Image 1 (cartoon, rainbow, N blue to C red):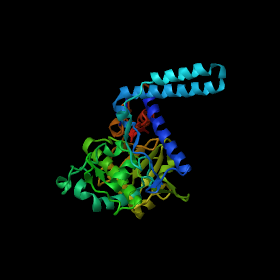
Image 2 (image 1 turned 60 degrees about the vertical axis):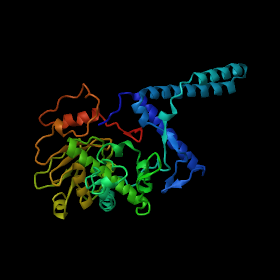
Image 3 (image 1 turned 30 degrees about the vertical axis):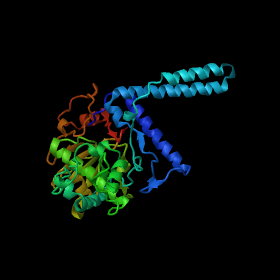
Image 4 (image 1 turned 135 degrees about the horizontal axis):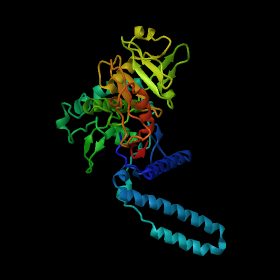
Length: 386
């Protein structure tokens, strides 16, 4: 599920870089020093600190990590110099020596091109309604080049300056969402400045562009499942409105922190309640919803379509999904399958299973849950470890 090396310090370093840049942008915005682009604060520089490159070049990552430590020491020494007059000269000399000894990393590795929207985040919430809106927009604006499956095999693909990328690959997950937004609305250019993809800013609103990105992620997850038999990149369940009996409606995402089982209602027997899971039913119509009147049910047609897209199936009825505590889709049970097995774990980590996790039993739901808890999803989105 991730190509990350087993290095907690690297995760911490990348998270520090991302957090520092976000806080700087927020400070600039609060001071009125940052402009706005597409409804959110705009990154004012043409470069940003890269996390994704550090994952590839561990040598430069170590140099940057040591640089951060030494610069922190320099600041501490200078602060001490302000407070300790008798040793101020010696402390200033020590700070200068630390700066000289700092192993500065290569700027070409640490710094990458940035866009005004690089640090912007989607406000759609990856909802089923947003995915459905994006599906309509994709069919109208993108199919000709990217193809109906997003693999870049559309009828106009061969006539483009650069062959359209495969959207079912890791591209959408490696780039920051804000960078994707910029490319959708403002287009793409090669190193010479020639347009390789036109921008759609005159045809799409900001909300349209975010919906389009949501659809491409959902479709990419489904195409990955169809091609490789697993979700090669992490995907959250499409968020939907859920009605639990006579209680007030709530969002599926509101159960984050708990394990959730999503069941596409069908003609077969419904799974029994399990205290380890919150069970939510997807109902394709009012009749199916009536059969689960006392349960937690979503009756949105967009929900049925969105989960079908992620599951890469046109026969969703009877399919079950398990969402882990962090809000990621981890397992899928196919219709008619009697028991969970290791094969149902479709979102896996690269780390070896914990020694405390036993092999899956015949009714392997418990062991499947234990494995998900022991192997949380870690991945990089735009260089930031989630």
